[in-house]
Length: 104
Image 1 (cartoon, one colour):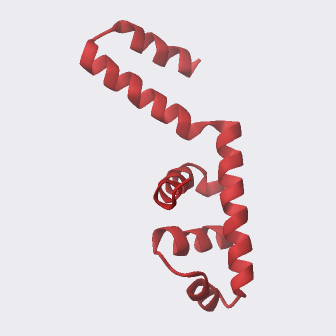
Image 2: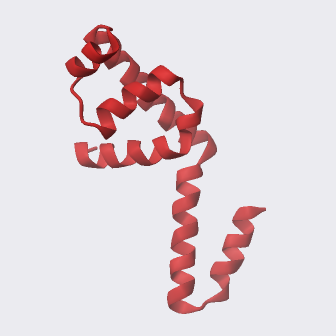
């Protein structure tokens, strides 16, 4: 996975699963992925080792992927948006029926 794709996916997953992370994990993730801090800058900011920051970010990435694999909130959101877009373009009622099925 390319860095830009990885960044985009993790940011999307973070929006869905942030509440499942600890405050420390949220802060670390935000500094690295949203504010573009380096590992060293985060370590200095949080008064921890660079290795601790790396470990935390690795765990957060793992957790975000695991949450998505189990809950599929992001995947279902993308599917819903696609069905809505398809409906708006085609006016095909099958798209609405698919949306209804997803909500059952």
